[in-house]
Length: 406
Image 1 (spheres, helix red, strand yellow):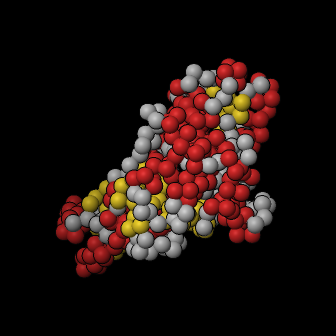
Image 2: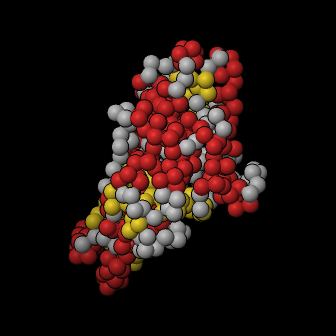
Image 3: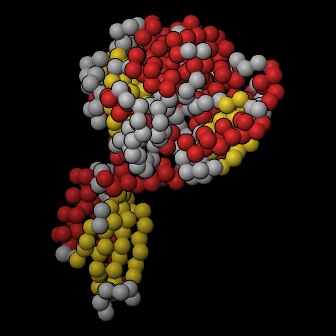
């Protein structure tokens, strides 16, 4: 198959195969995000898809399309997580043996989930490229079929069903915002959407730490760029796909870069205000909208929340960091007299400010604590920055010696 064969017809064929297998995920309007961004914003919630992301669409369609002889030899994939789970589940549903090569630093939750879907998991290398090299070696040894994460026309067609569903649900969409790792999702979405409505704008979003497709799009050159660490491992791809690069150059209108801080803020916002759990790669599109990077004010826009497979430890860290940034999580050290009523007095001040006490440490003998004194360390949660100011003001009026650490 050549890249020009990724057509609306192929995507519609994929949709017919996927009917009853994958979910038609909601395209929900967000009043809160619309007010905040100035767009009429909808979210395509692929975090609610089977296996937790859009990846099963392309994986299932690709494996379904294999000849019987190919299915018998099994399939192999390389992935940091979501493609792994999508291939594992799709292969199991189709009765095909699967081997998934994942980077050694992949999320333990994603590794366990991939095994749970029925795959044999091989851990190899530091990143996707290392895992892909090992996957190709296994393909050679076992004569299996490689299910590429993005650089395959059938995989792209399967992912394009996301765009098909979006345009069907809200035909008058004017802009679509989609995260880019290797580019399979945005390629399929762009082909589907532009085939149905040529005037629709498609904007891609990459991590600042992994700007490979952004640089290729802007410079028209596919060359490696120096990368950094990012929380968005699902879009941490060093080298753009050749097929997806061509499709993106042809069908995508712009590509923007988003920071980890903005991604973390979007994850927190969706969790707290919308009760949606998104992984960092899945939240990148919303983060770009919230950060004002997508020039679509006043337009009917849809952002794809591409996945929700987030490591719980990372989610806890993100929530804590954002609460600290918003001045809603405060650590206060207070030096008090070492006498029975002193702790009660400071508790009265804290209670009077209506701050929520998360934890208290009381230290009489620590280094730097004067004789006759005690240090009390409070971890407190407040409603917002103004509430924190009220707390600090109350501490100042108490005339106790204190220090706010965050």
